[in-house]
Amino acid sequence: MQCYVDAASSTSALTSSKNCNKNFKTVLGCGDYVAPVREQSLFWHNIWMDCGRPDSGHVADIMRRTRAAYHYTIRHVREIEGDVIKQRFATRMLNTHSRNFWHESQKLKSNRGDRVSSNVDGKSDANNIAQLFAEKYKDLYSSASYDKNKMLSLRQEIDDLFSSVGSLSQCVISCS
Image (tube, rainbow, N blue to C red; front, side):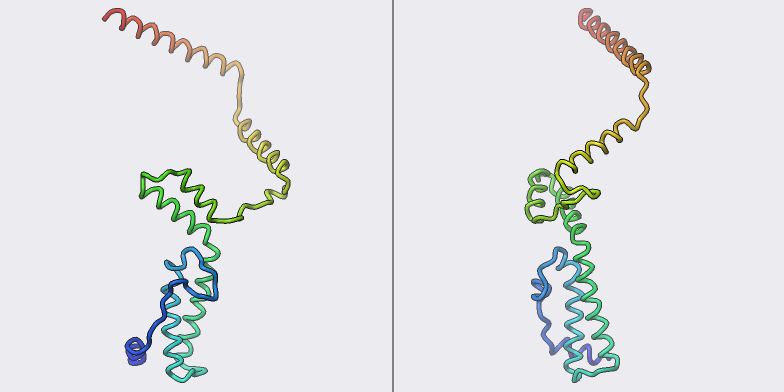
């Protein structure tokens, strides 16, 4: 088996993975995740071809397994494409302090095309979605208990502290 591998690697030219696969649209993360698996799949496909395209045996099994791994990786990368985009954005923002967050996020938004959901919790109309968010925020901000008398006494206590600090600072300024 090692003889096959050595012979194939010295004689077979492996194709480049510039766009991962011309049959698929370019997927973000393609070079990082798919390219190595694709190269391995092509390598074993070439060995399988050089062996006369056998229907069974070790070479046929390895070729099928690497091809299946390649197709699985493409599906997986398509599923995590959004996470890859977010991870790259975060890495750029952390590593390059001079970049403007809002400028980068606007580029990210414009590059993604129309990927915004038009349905939020069963609401599809913009006014209904806005009302849903208003209700959620109302629930969020009213979830903490609030006693008006306690808040008034706390505010008075803070005002008293500030007024005593203010008179102390005036005293320090006038005494110096």
